[in-house]
Amino acid sequence: MVNKIFLLLLSVAFGNVAIAQSLTAEQILNKSLKYHDPKGDWKNFNRQLNFVSERPSGADRKSTVFINNNKGLFELKEENNNMGIVMDSCFLIPSGKTCDQVKRTRNYYVYLWGLPMKLKDEGTILDPKVKEEIFEGVDCYLLRVPYEEDIWFFYIDKATFAMKAYLFLKDEPLREGELIYLDDEEKIGNMRLPKRRKWVTMPEQKVLGTDILTSSK
View 1 (spheres, one colour):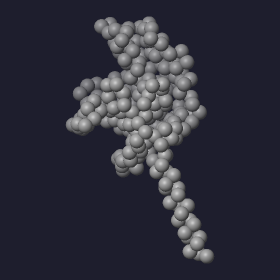
View 2 (cartoon, helix red, strand yellow; view 1 turned 180 degrees about the horizontal axis):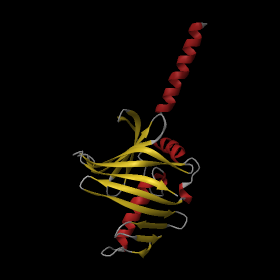
View 3 (cartoon, helix red, strand yellow; view 1 turned 90 degrees about the horizontal axis):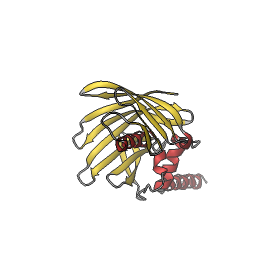
View 4 (cartoon, one colour; view 1 turned 90 degrees about the vertical axis):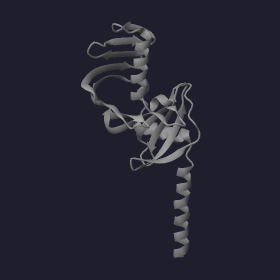
């Protein structure tokens, strides 16, 4: 009787492992979304975010960003670099820059601070093949998303489904690109956003800087 119970428990345990290992890329992403944005708040995100950017070769830079996803509004305020755009119409362009450059800055902020939610955007291709890696001592799923100019990889904690880091490569075979470490979290309403992002070049491992989310309202 004891042996039968043991075998039953063993089969259940191995069955759970098999289920975990058979998660699809889409299922892993959905579980990560449930961790970072359980109520689906990103689509209605309307917040002011305050940042400090630390750079090894220069002074820290303070920035204030306004994002209203309902209106397609993005506004950046920082020294000598104020800009604003609604949808694709710029209403504030810094001296010496173009509206296309404002759009690129908008896309940078909205994409990176909207991860992993932005991976649900129309046209995003999630590679169905899921890899597993140990990243900074944490067992992670590795999701791959190819874009037109580069390939992105997202490290998802297998235990919690929190996003631990992401990597983009300009040359996938040579591993040339940048790795972004995520550290700590900022709770904004029901959402969990990364508090710190450290940028490191690949394969040189040169630290480019750290972006810190200091507050939001």
